[in-house]
Length: 227
Image (cartoon, rainbow, N blue to C red; front, side):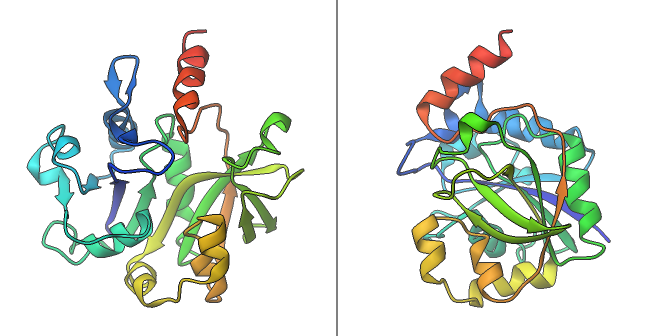
């Protein structure tokens, strides 16, 4: 089974315009995510709608589509995998472009779950101060199976992290699944899988990093990494 890592990176963002290009200790965030991913030794590709973002990478590691309005990163991944660049791969790991502190262990956990599930993800204990934050994504699970994801939920201890695994068949089917009301309200792409009856495997991982959801997270990232 051939596996590739995909990093969807849209320039526009309602909460943080140009987020992939924000600098973390002088390095564009999308470049930090890419460098963390290639440390896993898995072929890694950036999928973007921006020539500014694409210019940071070699042509053979970047897929550009400026015409299609993808609703989320999973749609962007699904739109890319049948092109010449990616059609040789059987499984895909989607690392969101706002995860500069992603680790090889997180990636490998998603890959391993694909032996059992067609879609996978990871989580870690959520600090108490994040549990009422609508920018943080909480997960409800039973064992190693995810049951629900939400932003507005409070008091939950599992922090869903921005990384997914997919088999090719599962990812190819994503665009044909209905986008239900819950996905639109929560703005969480993984709810499309759950609402369609797909089972999502999940694994606990250690994570001591920062997700960059809003401009203030850049300040928090610098504070954390300067310690």
